[in-house]
Length: 147
Image 1 (cartoon, one colour):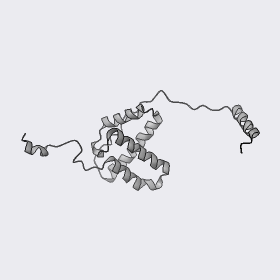
Image 2 (spheres, helix red, strand yellow):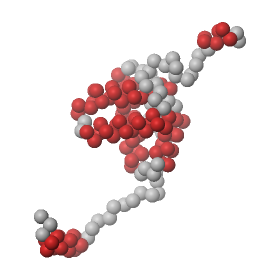
Image 3 (tube, one colour):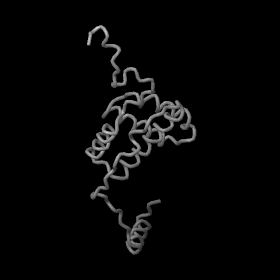
Image 4 (tube, helix red, strand yellow):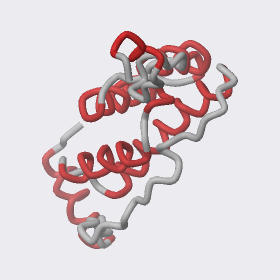
């Protein structure tokens, strides 16, 4: 191929991608849905998108792949996050991207929607404190007058 015609070759690297970058989808999400969310939800959405940008980049949403979404999942697990945390993060990311897909009328598949999330065996179960132990604690507190 003549090098002068190289610009006619279709590139799949997202440079000519007209879909919004992930940070812009977060801005859209917060603008449209942030008014109904508490500060914790807004902070969580920001953090989740920051994770994506850190791990796989701030790219047009059309250019993310399922493989990259899997890399993101693996990174979350490597950070020591629990199964429920990873599941929550993916749920948040899917919602943010799905809103952008619908708002911009994009005919694309959300690559974060069908990523397999393995169940972990390191789940910590929170035990129940027996009522007699609670009674002992309450009486000690009353003796110490912790009011």
